[in-house]
Image (cartoon, rainbow, N blue to C red; front, side, top):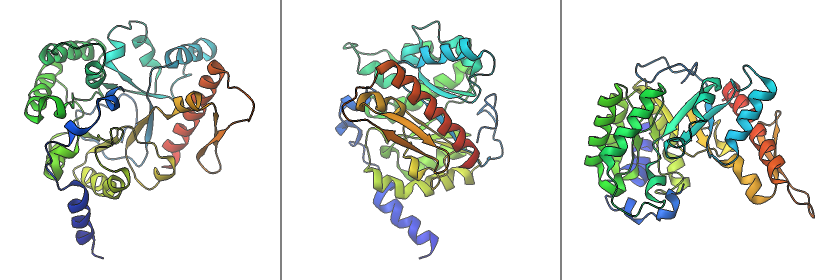
Length: 307
């Protein structure tokens, strides 16, 4: 089948839509939720490098594990680790940001959805939130940070206004996040105007995952066509990462072992993370978290070298 025909089928079935109401049907419970060097800024278009970075997200236990690594191994102990963290948690945590200089790469999420789904029942002043977010970005000279992709709350026009404000206040380009309601033409526009873009809605299941995956090659190819890097938010289906050549992805999956009572073991021969569980034995929470974090770091190193 000709490539163009296949693309049209994918677009028709998956992304050729302007369904404005889709976001509003996503349960709010879901909201609780290439770079050569970490210094690379998304402000200028670089040659796409055939590597993939895996960012470890999720704040539980992570800071203690990272800090202990520095104390135990001292310098360069975290250079192989890529971290994605939320501004929502960092804005009140003065102790975390000094760790960032030790990471291989660091991404900052706006934390807007977490903010909304927390204890903040009153109306949110999003202009003030963006001002505080921008001040944080400037203070710590953060280069990789996401827009407030809250289309389903305030509408795309407001998101664009907040994005422009964020750009003006930081004098940097954020990473815009594509959602189903934006449609395929808007994704192309993002790639034309920004050097780094992201695919959202994977975790919140805006689109059936299998259908979304059939369109991944189109998204990735389109981004690279415009010299643009592409990030898969919340996507680490390990068996598929060799097939879908994102420039970066992030995941909280390293936390799942503690929740499920098993430990991860990275297999360097298969490139997969195996789940180990012994019947009749209880997982020690602290030791399990440390082990699982380190095994995911090993996978991240493998992905950067092989994907």
